Amino acid sequence: MGERWFYRSDEEWISIAEQLKNTPCPHCHARGTLNRHGVLYGFDNTNDSNSQQRTLRARRILCSKRRQSRPGCGRTFSIWLAHKIRRFSLSTRTLLTFLQHAVVGTIANACKAVNHPRSERTFQRIWKRFDHTQIRIRTALLGRGPPPESSAASARRPEATQVLDHLQASFPNTDCPSQSLRWAAKAAVEDA
Ligand SMILES: [Zn+2]
Image (cartoon, rainbow, N blue to C red; front, side, top):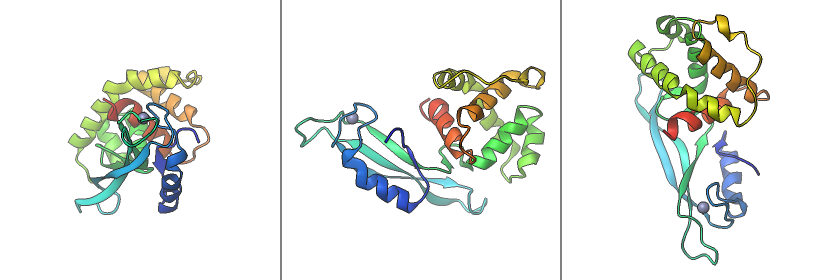
């Protein structure tokens, strides 16, 4: 089944949940040990930016050490709703648009481009986080393939532009940015 840490609908979650007993643990690769282990909630802006509404973000899965002939590792992991990004509290599309503008211009202009009610200070923090984790994202991306030929040298922030290009080139078949950004967030931010 490969890596599948996202789901887009209740139907997808149900089919993932039904397959759990046949799915190997991503940590120890044991089969038959995975169990549902609760949910994660967070605040986000997907509906109304001003409503601090708690919404479902992810499903927790536990690799059980108990009651198994071949026990699992006892670790947990999350299967995320595809369009949620933990910590950022932004939709992935807003985040990608912001980053695309931020690598070629000022943060202030990137804020205007996404036309988002969050404060510029929040976006400054998001940019700093991306900036700090660039090297980690780049290293992880190199594990998937070489960077694309890039004209990034002329960009305002050539290294960040390259990382963003590399990220998008690594996921050429997704028209939605969710998968690539979720993957990058996982590689760089959430495991930090
Ligand atoms: Zn395990």
